[in-house]
Amino acid sequence: MFKNLLLILILFGLTQNFMGQKKKYLVWLSDKDNTEFSLDHPEKFLTQRAIQRRLNQGIKIDSLDIPVQHYYLDTIRMHDVDIRCTSRWLNTVTIMTDDSLLVEEIRNLRFVDSVNLTWIEPQLKSAKMKFETLNAAVPDYGGSLDQIAIHNGQEMHAMGFTGKGKRIAVLDAGFYHVDSLPAFDSLWMKNQILLTRDFVNPGGDIFDTHTHGMAVLSIMGGNVPGYLVGSAPDADYMLIHTEDAASEYPVEMDYWIAGAEFADSMGADIINSSLGYSVFDDPSMSYTQADLNGRKIRVTQGANIAASKGMLVVNSAGNEGNKSWQTIIGPADSKKVLAVGSVNKDSTYTYFSSRGPTADGRIKPDVASNGYHTVIQLPNGNIGTGNGTSFSSPVMAGMSACLWQAFPRKTAMEIRELILSYSNRYKNPNDSIGYGIPDIYQAWLEESKKNTERSTVIKVYPNPASTAFIVETPPGETLSVLTLYSMEGKIVEVRHLNNEFIQKVYLPDGIAPGMYIMNIVTNKRNLSQKISVL
Image 1 (cartoon, rainbow, N blue to C red):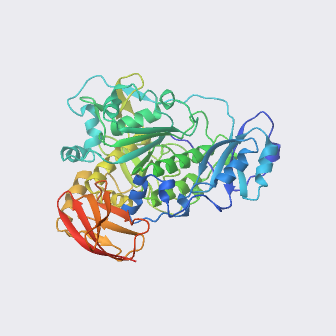
Image 2 (image 1 turned 60 degrees about the horizontal axis):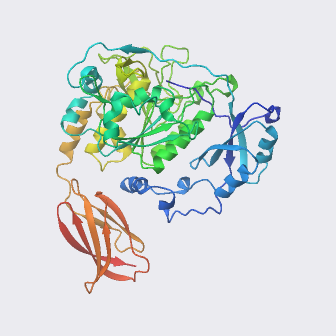
Image 3 (image 1 turned 30 degrees about the vertical axis):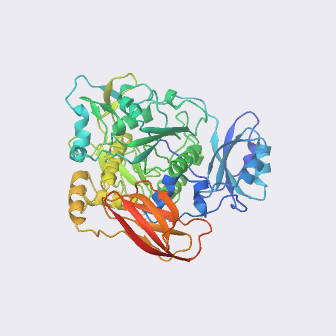
């Protein structure tokens, strides 16, 4: 499913708002001055896993990670408006009110840069999806074998790479009956659904909303032996409701960015977004194809930041190929997003899949996967099929999780490039399926050969250090316990680590400068090394 959205940087005529008609506005803040948060203590606003993901990929925690200033939020609330969501990345607040005078008051606050209209209360309308019912079961993967085998994914699964240990955030329109439909039984039994969050209707029941996210999740995490096996059946999932299926307005970009920020803070590795934005119910808010340059569309800006935080953002290319728009839509135009087009089961281009290039001439989509007659969980409890790049994206997101599981030391961008490198049109890309269909098993096989002679040295750096050391192990080796001794042999500190291959270890408060002995226990050995504290 695709929605089309617009960023309006300057809005005129806010005073024409009428009492009684609810509207949502994006409030752009000027700064994060006098915040109670500090970059020296990121654990106050990021989970340890989110911090670790940055550390693993050499990404610095910066001012974009600092939450919106609480004083500013409290001041805005005093104007009797409803705060719907915030964005620390863009430093914005999305509010809802039916009083234009309150909007003008907020616009005049000293810390507010600008205010843009982003949603008008619409008349409700229904959304439809096309499904087909499968009549017979096939052993093992069943009908889903084709969408897995197109990437040689069954070989990855056979090697034990099923997405285990990777966290996938699913940004979507709702997750109808995911708490009861058969495809998700194993996810619940194994505690693989880590959390849910509703940004569209805070406090609402995401399991009693739209069916789209349910179908998307089934493609990655579903398990009905003989009918459906997901592309990453052992990954962990975060279910985040960001899409308002009742209307098409720019506010959904605010929800998307808020959802991506939440996924980041909770340690997600991958975002699957089977959503897109370009045209809205109010045509004056719509983007044009000239805006698809990877920088202008607000949701693309959010996706760029999400990728810069070390997450792999996998996004549907769009279903505009046979419509007047034809091309991709945001955030698929991002240089950092892995935009996924659709192919049929015979690997040929699907007629509805959005084409490239971007407005600045780049190849899009990036890759392609099966988005025609893709096997999914149906709302009625049966297993069936659906069509759309909404469904090719989760196939690819799940396969990406399997590949990343195999190479946990790689960054998100390295995984993205590896996927492109082993796609069947890598040397001859086009505007229909980009670099083509990735062979994930071949990518693993060839890359594994390159990594057979890696160093066996455990690295400790910087040395000397004043506040913290980083301890890094070679492939296949993980950290268990770290003990710091004085030169006289007295224990200064004992740290039980989280079986990571790289860990930032902060020195104890008040530790005296000088030489110490660091004893490191891994899953394979026990060794000691001198370190110097400044």
